[in-house]
Length: 93
Image (tube, rainbow, N blue to C red; front, side, top):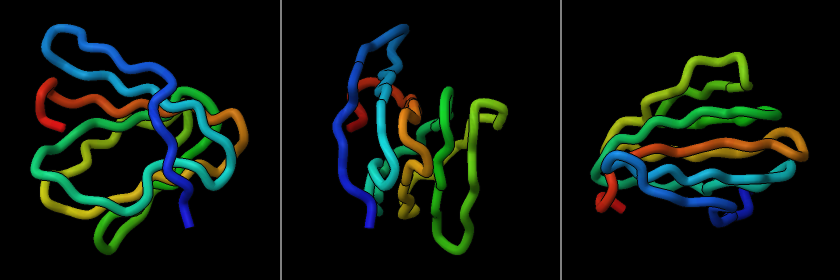
């Protein structure tokens, strides 16, 4: 089970919100769904991104993922010291 964390940093740049998370093993964003899509990328460590019927492991070398609107997803960190970011249009959340 993924333990919910809050962003270490959150800011708006050019009408997009950037939520930056610093997480350890098992922390992240438990399964949830919302009405907008967002991009997720990992800049340090690794994350498991689970979506309806599929999952991905992402690292600093991975392409950012676009998580679709209206589809459940979960972000779980696999290493201590992992840093990942969610980016979406400001005002959506």
